[in-house]
Image (tube, rainbow, N blue to C red; front, top):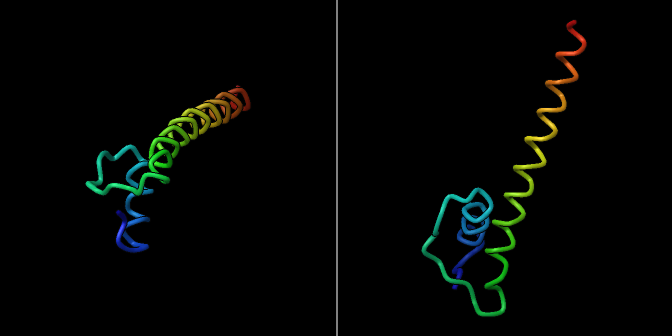
Length: 64
């Protein structure tokens, strides 16, 4: 169980950044949220990488 808001925030950030196991367990009705946050983080990482690559390509084409 997450004892307070700070611990809940840490759990969320640890899941989102794929830092690893935070050592906390969630109540049964919240268990899926950790996996969902990790999945969302991986999707955001991929999207951010694609946007950064597109910006670099666009800037490179402006230089030539």
